[in-house]
Length: 220
Image 1 (spheres, rainbow, N blue to C red):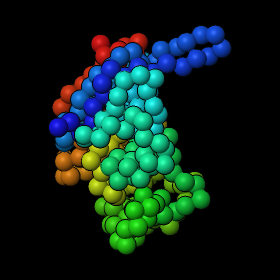
Image 2: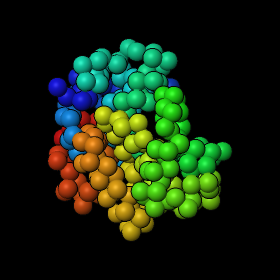
Image 3: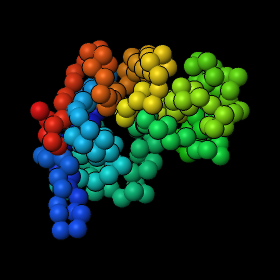
């Protein structure tokens, strides 16, 4: 059974009197434990595909399944706890909560699940990625590489079945980008988590289990 599946999904937007098709009849299955790279030029539909697969957005037509559950028509109130338990996110621009410390940012998804071990698990994760001394710092007090490591810890704290990563190294220098990617792949292999990663980097694509290329909203 695929961890995530898209069946003939299309996404269109209406701007004025124009209808713009961002994704056009895309079907895709991603297996348990698979590392899939989504590659394509700017505007090819990569981020839109991740948004639809993760339930952050709805397709204009087609269906999206997480395992055997059709999430296409589930309300946001129903999707939020499902995403928190099932999915981890790592974004290019980090998306940390500025008013929370590094530790509190990592704890947040576990606290939503009422995990009584949230504090200890978050502290252990930050220690593992070398950020124990920075755990009480706020995002504005961290470097880009440190913020992305915090975001990565937040993504894995609930042991999700699947992690969606949208250009996770895009805002980092080469050294920090490699360190973040190595840690992400370490978590993925250790926990057999499915990883769907959007990137422009062919070096990253070469180490993936599989790569798809999007062009003009279709799998090329």
